[in-house]
Structures are given as C-alpha cells and as structure tokens.
Image (cartoon, rainbow over all chains, first blue to last red; front, side):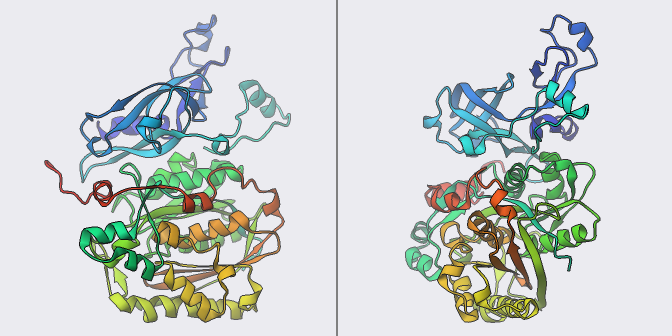
Length: 164
Length: 352
C-alpha cells in the first residue's frame, strides 16, 4: 500500500472516524457521502457529519488464520473477526490479547491501537485498530447523541464526552 | 516553581506476555533462576509482534484521557520519552497525538535520555503549563527495549509505559519541587545503527546509578525541607529490583514506603516507563495529603527528582477506569524463549 493511500485512511484506522446522517442519525463506517437508508437521503447529500465510533462492540463471527498473508507470518494463529459496534456498523479486525481458542461469538470487545504491518525494515509502519476483550472497566464513556450535541451547542448543559 | 501545576491524569500499559529469567537461562546454559534472584526480577514483560513504543504510549494515554475526562484538543504539548522509538527519524509523538485526536494544534517531540526521557518530558510540560503557554501537556515514558541475547540485560529488559497529563486544573498530585543531577558518565549506551546496547558492567552501579539517584534524592529533600519520613511513598528508577531497594535503604526509606513504587520485580525493566509505571501504581493507591518522592535515572547520566503532594482531587478522580497497575504486575501469559525470540525479531527469516 502506498504511503499516501494509507495516510488518507489514517482518521479511520487510528480513530474509527465514521459519519452520521443528520436526519435519521444512522452511523456509517467507513464514512460515506450520502445516507442510503434514509427516506430523505437526498437531503443528506453533502451534509453527513463526522462521527467517531467508541470502539465498543461484540464479535458476530470470526475465523482463525493459520496460513497468513505476507507480513503476518509472525502472528499465526490469529483471529480475524466481524465486530458489530454499539453504534451499528460492522467492522472486520483482528482480535488480540486472547487465545484464538477462547474467542466466541458474542465476545465483548473494544478497539485497541496496534501495529498493522510494516513496509519492510526500511519502510513506513502502518498503525490502526484491532480488537481486545472488554470488561466494564474499559467501557468507553458515553458519547452524547446528535440531539444532545445540538442542545449543548445551543447552550444547554450536557454530560461531557471526552477521550479518543 | 509554580506550585499549582502537577499531574491531572495518568494511565499505564504493559504488554500481556511474560518470560522468566529461568527460561532465559535454560537457553544460554546459565542458572537463570539465580540470575533472576540476584537481580530481584521474577518475570519480565514481552511485547506482542504488533506492539511497540507507539502503541504502548497510545494505550497509556487513551486511558489517561478517559480517566481525567480531558478533551484531547486541549493538549498543547505532547512528548514521548523512549530509547526504542520505532523510527530513527519520524516522531513517535506525532502518531500518538493523531491516535488520541490531539492534532493539529499542539507541539510534539520525541525525547531520549536512556531511562529518564519520560521524567524529562514531565519537567518540560511543567514549565510550559506553569508559564501559561499551554493548558495541558502530555509526558509519556515508554519502551520496548532489548538486551543482546545472552547478555545480563536480557534478563530484565522489558516493555511498558505510562502517560501523565500535566496541568493546573483538577490537579491530583501537585509537583512542589523538581530538580535534576546530570553528569557525563558513560555507563550504558547504544551507538547509531546498533541493535543492542552496550554497558560498562559493574560501572553501571556505584558511579552511575547510585551516585546520581542518591545525590539527586538528597538534594531534593534538602530543597524541600523534608526527610525520608516525610514521604508515604517513594519511587526510584528500577533497572532491576535490587538497585532501587539498595539505594532506598541507603537513603533511609523503608520497604513499606517502596512497596507500591517497585514494579520491576514483576514486569522487568521498562526503561523510560519504569519509574513512571511505579508512580502510576502509587497513584492507584495514594490518599489525599500524602507526599510522594520520585527519582528517575537515565544512563549517560542523570537523575530527575520530583516531590509530589497528593491533593483532595484524587478522591474525585476516576481510578476505576482501565486496568490498574497491580493487575499488570500480577497478570500476563508466560511464553517460552522460542516464542520470545520470534516476537522480538531475534530469528533470521528467509527473504528478509
């Protein structure tokens, strides 16, 4: 992957930067330019708002990789999973910090920051999200909904949201 | 110095894998268990193949930001101290800043001073915050250091890090004083392009670690008007478990005062992270009104000392979020040397 291509994807890979439809509040990852499910989807054109996923979700399916792609040989066997995030979008990612034999459908996970691959010994290093088992102590703080954010910007008090 | 400034939040991270000195000794035909006992190191942490100083720093800082409910856009400076930055040229700090959402309105840089680059970063942040140049500064000490296979360092060199947010609001540990003691002492070094460090063997003891740490601690207590009895907790840099206990005894500190600040026996020497993970462990249990002394050390050589006062804010601070340091010390999965060698890139692969 070229340096420029990966760099363009940095907001998504580092911070799960997706987007949200201003009308029906559906969240998308990766971000898209129009809301396809909304009855007023034409109104969403050009108005989709940036939305950072919390990284919290659960495994809906997974596979254990024994024959790795180039660059991942050191990590076999490893688990690749489809994770349904609490905001809705389903993401594919590796599950780390747990033996592949212990991964189960329904496992609660959170996004963690790991090295994805490197372009040889002299090339650039790519970082991004993987998933790790989650307990309540790692539950990301609640993010205000779109309507709560709107109230906050209008001056009404709202619970502070913070953190990556 | 401006005594309103101090630690606003903190977080630590230690990779999951562990290896014992006995397992390392088995490979090299030496009594690893005896080596571990003489160093007072029971296990050391090992990073997974997809972990490095950047990922460790990011995990530690993300924990700190959530615990302190800090908006990353309010971070005005971010410094990462390490001697194992993944790039020789290309800052660790920029990746970490991007990964926590702190870019672009901040200054960032990588620090290197052997094992004390993280404490140097804290001092820099204290200056910037105290001068009202920034609202929050972030100082991280993090490493994934290696000793040459078979070398004494291999029994202790490990991986981990801690991040501290420095500010003037909701300060949970005020920095009452900080001072440093620095000389040109070649006890440990790594030349450009070299994979493993070199060291002066026994020379790393008396003229290096002990002289700098004890001088710095004495001068700090003199300036602060304190004695060892003034402190509830003390944290020393800990290249192994033995050195900090010896210097602590020499200075007049008890085992109880050193208890929480001493983490190397359980996770090994995390270099730039060592004293800072010890400090994070102290903050996990500290109570309002307690005084804490931390003395870092970096080969080359220098020591940074800090006199902290724990404030009432620590009672309101959310210490329940994230993994407490004690769990990093107790937990982990032990791996054999062959897996360790694979994870640490010590095996020559085809096509590489």
